[in-house]
Image (cartoon, rainbow, N blue to C red):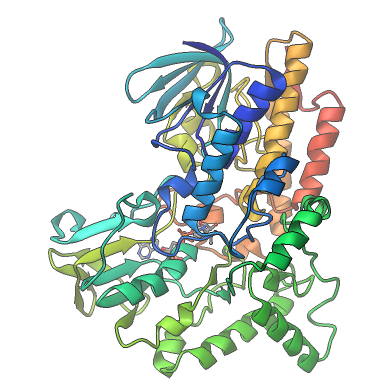
Length: 530
Ligand code: N01
């Protein structure tokens, strides 16, 4: 089957890409989606407590004023089922389903230079071709299941949070072990603890977390949002991280300690990711960051009653927010429950999974269920799990052997007419995702429209432009404290053998947007159009 464009994935980015290319540019488009429904990341991540950490009114599409006005969000942070309802509504409202092929996982994609076509193959052996190939596969969709000896011998059941069974998991009366204390583990812990007979949390790295302060949205707030959407969207577009609040223009080091404490307290009570925006230097000055880290550690001490448990929960090895900062609902409070045990893997690492549970260096923990909240082979994993070949059979895996190399996180040299949505080298995961996605999709659709209007054949970034961009991405990261978290997935450090390269662009979404616009205005500078 032949199409103008093939898009991989029916999440936030794939759905909007389809709408733009089909209904905007007028292309024939096919979306190939591995799941049997829309939703992407949210389709797979159905674990207990799954909820977004950006607020609902701006974790949403801005491209349709009608959609904005007709959709009603119920809570400050949308829960996974509500996001799924929203994305299903979008798929129906814009009549997207007829061009989405579900249960179709792309296994291969190769560029035929003579024909200027991408040949795509799915897991059912089906073959499709298209001029444009757009993997919109998400940044966090390839589950990272650690290779722990003995997993196959476990007599209970185990799950990865990113591949959660659709029918759910019954924790009633069960002894559950949860491995991992990133955003996912921190969200799942209180919910599982309330459902299970007993929960053992296996923690390798203690994490900072800020209370989310989730709550139902009042009718007044819902009305305010609808009346002020234009302004809210303007702010999100012009901000560093795609949020409609500003980073305060004051230094954490230039005010009296009592005043600083009061501002942190205020931000803690308000809750959410804007805690990080309390001072302008939290992400760039270690001393300023220390003030935030100390504040959060003092809160952990206050909340957790057992001082020995509180000590284990203290994040000490990385500055605050240099790993993606989680937000939570009663995470630290959960360690005051009688049915919850914290196991510090730094004291005694996991040695094996046994038929009965998890064995560390100094104890064995009998379990009925193991939950792996161990994250993802982020950003490059979803791309590299497909066999993608560009010109002359160049394998993407080889092109990225030393880490991902892209121009603007949009294109890879040697892979003409292939566009990545929120790929490595773009702000992506450092931004509220729908904001980053809409900018990418709009840019790609405009670019393809430009190519069509001029009857052009192909677009491909030059290796020089990609090299310059990679070096700029490194500089942008090094201007912040972000690289100081040595074990972060931003660096690929959570997957054994993965090259350590800081993958997202840390220069800020607003700056990035301006760069992309300037590139297009100069006739796609850094790209060769044929
Ligand atoms: O994954 P993570 P995640 N033995 O990689 C531990 C987004 N998200 O799924 O830090 C023992 O952050 C690992 O330990 P360490 C968000 O962008 C958003 O939680 O490597 N432990 C770590 O504690 C987020 O950042 C939302 O030492 C092992 C944990 O597993 C991203 O998804 C909600 C281990 C993995 O943490 C990923 O979050 C959820 C091993 N072998 C997620 N291997 C919201 O919107 C790994 N770990 C709210």
